[in-house]
Length: 151
Image (cartoon, rainbow, N blue to C red):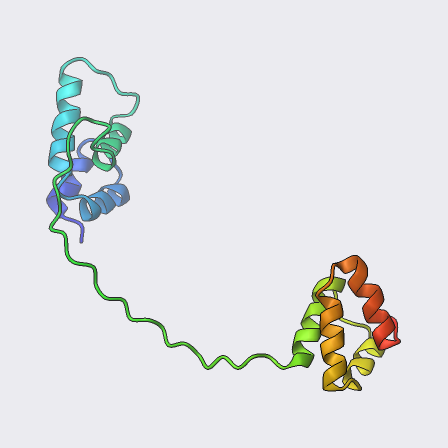
């Protein structure tokens, strides 16, 4: 939740409202120190290209500006609840073979090849699957031979 006093402090130095609100919500403990450091540098003659950008940088990168960021109260991590694992039934062999063929071809099988797939037995599906596990240059000629149909 942005802290209005800190947001106003940043805005007085040229930081836009959305950025000031974000910084005051994310790093409220750093803002007073960062503002003081930037003001001291400016008072000593330092000329920033952009005062607001320098201030944002000082808030976000305390080590770069030579101060240690105050530690926030560290809360112990909350226990994350695991998402329920859906019942994963393995896809049927026909779906696996169709997917492998589509990946190897870069498109769907031809209607003739799909009809030939429909007529395969479980054992023939296993053979086709093994053929499709080979490199593309071997898999496609084997698939065409096994299906006896254009791919």
